[in-house]
Image (cartoon, rainbow, N blue to C red; front, side):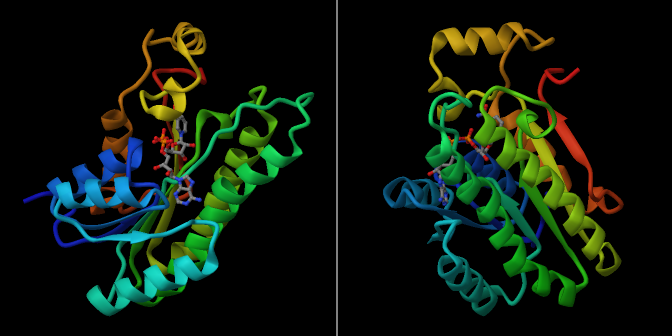
Length: 241
Ligand SMILES: NC(=O)c1ccc[n+]([C@@H]2O[C@H](COP(=O)([O-])OP(=O)(O)OC[C@H]3O[C@@H](n4cnc5c(N)ncnc54)[C@H](O)[C@@H]3O)[C@@H](O)[C@H]2O)c1
């Protein structure tokens, strides 16, 4: 029996990368996982491989959130876990005329996370149980050059604490996970020299695998983390030390 047996869990950005690995691991551990994303073909293929339901959910769209959550409540009658994993990274710094990138990252990474929380919070409060896991970044714990990404990920860190505070008395937990450089399209897309730089700045001397982040996400979704809320957990090979 897995530690997520019987749980109903929604994961955003689950077509590929860390979200897809989290989905696979949660299914293995007994959960029913609804995979969601905006890249429909890949989403369907990933969900089908797991024999799992899926939903087109653009995290910036309030109506997409409404449709997905309504469907989940019709199908299962409850929601035990939400992983706000969808995110984008646009490589721009302060002197790159970066306002558009700043806004785009604020929309997906910050607003997208907020909209998900806004949708599930009343349901979890009513159930008197639930776990929300927000995927921030090491860029949500300390400064980096990409001002828009850092701003959006610090926002996720802060929101997590506000939500944890407000929902704790209803037995609903909210925590943030802060990956370092992880081997997905997002980090690998930076190119070999940047990946090498990140590796050299990581005390463990390597970038991480999506499975290593997913293990922490599984723990936070599970009842084993029953007294853990408002925490920020870095899974980064020591990057922020
Ligand atoms: N890879 C890393 O090194 C790293 C480090 C720290 C944090 N993160 C964070 O981890 C999370 C997962 O990223 P990843 O590394 O798997 O990258 P990825 O690019 O492989 O996956 C991101 C997923 O989010 C989806 N997405 C993008 N915009 C969306 C939207 N508006 N609505 C719904 N889905 C959307 C994409 O389609 C994609 O499937 C992100 O929040 C990212 O910021 C990644």
